[in-house]
Each structure stands twice: as C-alpha cells, then as structure tokens.
Amino acid sequence: MQELYDRAFARLERVAAKRGDFAQCWADYISVHPWDIDVRNVDARTLEVLAVMREPAPVELALIFSEWLAALRASLDNAIYALAVAITGQNPPPHAGRIQFPICSTEDDFKTQARRLTMLPTRIIEALDRGQPYQSPWGPESNLTWWVNELARKDRHRELHVGLGRVDEHRVRIAPPSGVAIEFDETVEPYSHIEHELVVARFNASQPLHPSEITADLRGVVIGPEIQAWADFRLDGRRQTLEDRMIYTEIFTRNHLENMARMGECVPPRGFRTLDPEEPEDSAKPDVRGTSG
Image 1 (cartoon, one colour):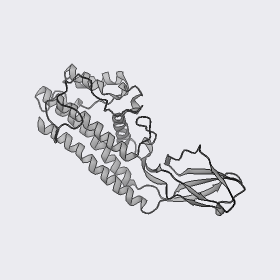
Image 2 (image 1 turned 90 degrees about the vertical axis):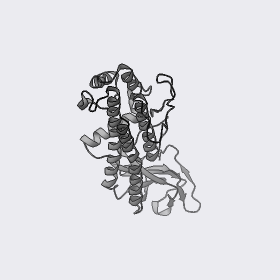
Image 3 (image 1 turned 135 degrees about the vertical axis):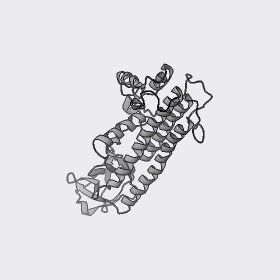
Image 4 (image 1 turned 90 degrees about the horizontal axis):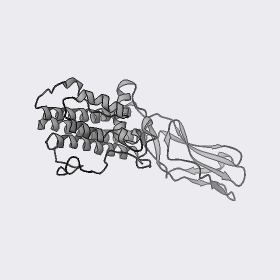
C-alpha cells in the first residue's frame, strides 16, 4: 500500500511548484506597473491618495491558483483512498466510488459524509471527525482545510478565482507646498485588496489645496497578490499574506496526509514532518489544523 501513499504525497509535493509558478506570474504582471497613483479632493482641505488598477491581473494567475487548489484537494482524496486500501487489504476497497476525504462545516454534514466511509473502522472515523473544520471554536471559516474545499468547489463548479493586488506594506510620504501643514487621517485602513481603486491615505491640510500642488511618494507601498474570495481570511486574528496562507495550507494538508499514513501503518516520503509518529494516536496533539482566533 506504500506506493498509494507515495503517490498522494507526490501530488502534494507538486503544490510548492505551482506556488512558485504563481509567484512568477505575479512578478511578470507587476513588472508592467499595473497601478496608477491618483490624488483627489474630498473637500477643499481634505485629500485622498488612491491606488487605481489600470490593468487587471492575467487569467493565467487564476489558472495556476486553480491547479494549486486541485492538487491539494486531490492529495487528500488520494490519501484517504490509500488508507482504505491499507485497512481493508483490497484495491479497490469496498465502495471505492464513495471514498472522499470529508471536509465538513457541521456535525450533521460529517455524519452524512461518514456514511460514505463504511469500509473504515470507527476509530478512524472518529480521528477524521476530530480534525473537521466544524470543530474549530472560531467556526469552520477559520480553518484552512475548509478553505481548500470551499475554494476548490467554487473553482470547479462556478468560475476561476479572481486575482487582485493587496497592500502588504504601507508607507506614504506627502510633500505639500511650503508653509502648508498636513495631518494624516489615522482611520484609513490601507491593508486591503484593490478591486478597482483603494484609498491608501487621507490627510487634512492647514489651507485649501489642489491635488496638483502636492507630491505623493508611494514607493513605501508594497502591493502583493490576493485572491478575491479569500481576502478577508484571518489566521490567529491577523491578516496574512497570500503566500503565507498558501504555505500554511500546504503544511496543514501534509499533516492530514501524515495522520492518514500513520493510521495505515505507512511512512511518508522523507518521513514524518508535522507530527511525532511515536505519539499514541489518541493522545493530545498540537492544533495544526489552520484555525484562527
């Protein structure tokens, strides 16, 4: 059965390459400077500085993200299939067409999904249940495995996910005319994604100003990639860059695969990296399910 696990882990290993392809596609996109800076009056003494998208992200970005998602979701399904083969000693195992790794938002949903896995013993069903998104105290949407399923489902059945820019680092400098004092509006939340345009700064001047009278320096503003449907996610209560979320998701997915390998008495390629295989199966383990607080 080892070779079935090896193939599941091989599929997971591909996602890092896809993440690299995604990063290169993003780098090519921003090399043409697809955002402009605009300064506008809110009133005579209040002005806003905006990042304005003039060139949308290429569809290639969405296609690569789609491939990344598909590989993650398929690796989970491949691993639970390998587990079913290991447990039953049959390939294909009984009811092979029903086998799918459950990712559930409610307890009732898990009970429904578990009925598809009658070839697995109760102890394994219970282990799968403990790692379900609905078990998170902050709700299923705080769980990265839930996002793998949700994003992949929408990608398959609805449309490609839209790629956007998001402000990851923020430092705006304003050069007003001599003798004019300005004060920045601290209520502006610049760390957000840019759908069409985004206010990255707002300030009040000590006298009326026209946008042409000031110079805005946005070289301290770093715009990174974002996926529109995933933009509001928080991990541990904080915003994470898309790259960090992708890396964490890969780690949490590997943890699921390693648990299934351990339950099937097999060893992952390059060994166990996210858990201690000597640890008793039902003992307390660190929460590595990707939940936010």
